[in-house]
Each structure stands twice: as C-alpha cells, then as structure tokens.
Length: 137
Image (cartoon, rainbow, N blue to C red; front, top):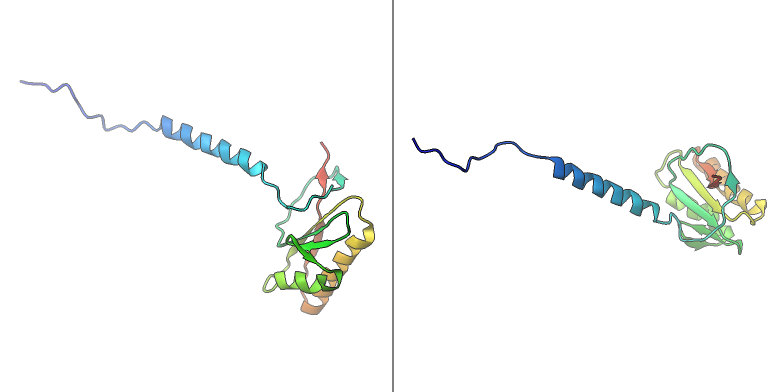
C-alpha cells in the first residue's frame, strides 16, 4: 500500500487574522484621536465635572473676535437663530454644542441660548444647548 506524504489539513489557524484585527483596531483608535472636532481654534473653559456627552446635531462656535460660526460657517448675530433653525429642520429635541473661547464675555453665550430658545418657542421643540469644556486632568 502506498501512502502519500502531503496530507491536506482541514483546520484553519485564525491567530494571524486576530493579530491583524487588533492592529487595525489600534491604528483606528490612534488616528481618530488626532482628528480635530472643529477647525475654529478656541481655548475652552476647564471643568472638573464628569463629562456626559450628548449627541450634538449642530455645533456653534464663538472665536476670540466675537464672531459666530454655525458648523464652521461664519454667521452674523442677526441671522444666528435662522441659520441654526435651518440645520434643525425635521430634528426633534436636538442638542446644540457651543464652543466658545474662555475669554468671550457671557453675553455672547446668552445670545446663542436666546436664539435656541426663540427656535424652541416658534417650533414647540425642546432643543438644548451644551457648553463644550476642556477636561481637567
């Protein structure tokens, strides 16, 4: 009787595949932390409270020159409510994330809150504003 030396092994070794998956996971975790969430540079106020992050639908920024930006688009103060409302069409109970430099007077923050309250009053929605802060380590 003749025996063959080359036998086919029906088992699959997945060790190299799991190594590849872990390497890709680490790569994407590292690269996602390098992405800046907004292009407008502001020095955020610091907060020691636990960070609870709601899903934001619109991002509003106020830079050191007291200019308003809705989704990185310059917006005059007089058109702030209308511009935010355009982003919130068909969105129920949205969250507006406010990025503002810590040197910006509180009146500009109140202007954004008033604009959202005006939208809420006209549409009957309950949109809310959250202030982005930098975590203290």
